[in-house]
Image 1 (cartoon, rainbow, N blue to C red):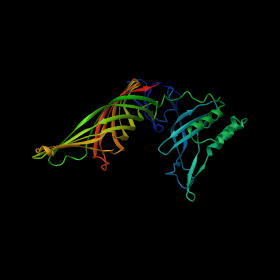
Image 2 (cartoon, one colour; image 1 turned 180 degrees about the horizontal axis):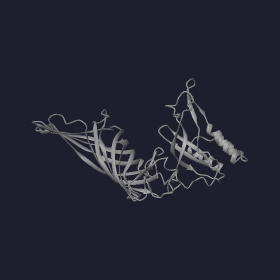
Image 3 (cartoon, rainbow, N blue to C red; image 1 turned 135 degrees about the vertical axis):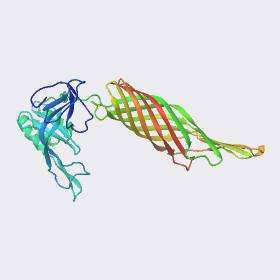
Length: 397
């Protein structure tokens, strides 16, 4: 809706807005050239069923409220500017909005039966330098009480709730519902988000190469074999903005086995010594990752990302076998050394790429950056590298 009162339908370039947008891109039809609109051009815009914004000329408090950056006295600094306020909850009597930028998130209240525009619900905090404690001033409670006397004066429970209300979206929405005399079951609005967290189960093939981290000694040769073994996993995806779904946090728990085989051979004029180390590595991994959908359509997504594998490994069947062949037969022998373990906890940086199909299937490949297992006191120092290919299925919608 323009400032002239004209309603225009079309397409808004909906992005991963971490803060309230300063302007929006708009097309009446997708083949048009994009137009840019700011708060001075629009009085309101809505992404149907997802988010709505109202333009307003408001005072914006600039005091920081996080412990690391807050001042040691109440900071009442404000700036006045035109902004897009996000509609949090709409009501007959009052409506709640929010405005977020690099400083903080603020909430605004609009008395719908007053000619005045939205007013910031004020919450102030500072660090007392003498007691090293945070002091707060909950001005927003007084603002709510004024509205409660106007719209719910007969209900003391509402006023009691207001006094105990914390400065967060969930609790402020509850007060707004009470000021609008809504039933407890009518807490949700027309605006909402798609399903956020999605769980998945998966399987795949893990290809891992274990080898000595150091080069073979002079006069020796070395070789290693890559191990292929099934991988089993469960996990979840948590998008930062479920309505857009471009950037998400993924956590995965997986289990796999690696059966390594490394050999070194030394040839002297009369002696051939072959040493073969065959560790078995059973690994449980927790894999926090950031994923970005480069192509982000509804039913197909192409993504890239990276994360850290937090691994716990055990080595139940690791042995080092040495075979010595001498020209003098009586000096030839075989021996086997048992190694109880090597590093149990280790970390690995893992880039990832994949394809998400129909919101149900995910095909991915992870590359394991070469990592040294550094506990040399009980076993040869090893280097692990490789990749895995996985197929996951999302449970539910």
